[in-house]
Length: 303
Image (cartoon, rainbow, N blue to C red; front, side):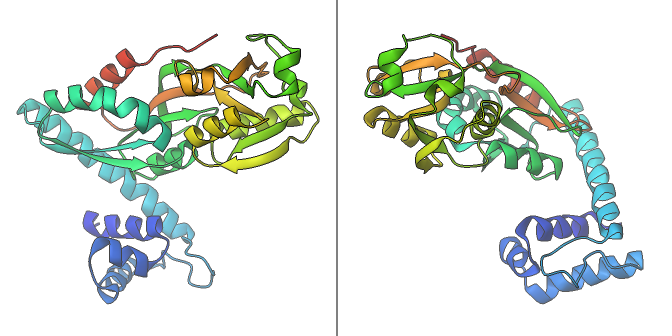
């Protein structure tokens, strides 16, 4: 089995096509197609289902990818252990993080981390948390900072921070005139308000959907935004409400003076902030230190 060939197959899966993967890998499409053929000839079975409209793996292809991921993880673990024996910290660390978290967390942790490990090259993968879990499972990054409400069996989750989910309401809204700041409420208290929603894929949006279903109402959506900062600022200026982690509001005078916040009864639908990695991955000393630095910067945000 050729590990370089395996990395090419995984690049094709991640890119969605041979053409896109070839561009990303800076090799020709015919050359990459020959790599696929070489792997299939070695296995004696096709790894891609060429009848499907979208690029999909055959069962043999699935088993090949699963097995090669385990082999590549074992190789990385071994090389990491040898490097530590030699006190050699030259490495590339692929870190997954959401765009929102990168704004608040990376300036706090990267200066200390890179000062301690100047030979470690950091590659950032900025994606929503839901996609980061998938990327980790597929070996697309080494570790990730993920805010999530659920867990996958093949990942390890080390808690960095618990979060309190609140309803942030502009002071122009009826609910802000009716209910005092800091009162715990059901989401249904805002059934007559205009909602500024985060786009699907945000774990906060997932929680909001669950709570709305539990309360048996459909929120009246004024706007739907991907960026949480933009959503906060828009909500504060309009006659609207938004479901948001309190940690993203606390200390932000741009919105605190214009809004009231109400802790939501989440009925078990919670989200937490984790340092995540594949269960079979051996954490190197610099990965462990990254976790320790991040944990020292995180705190529990509550009203």
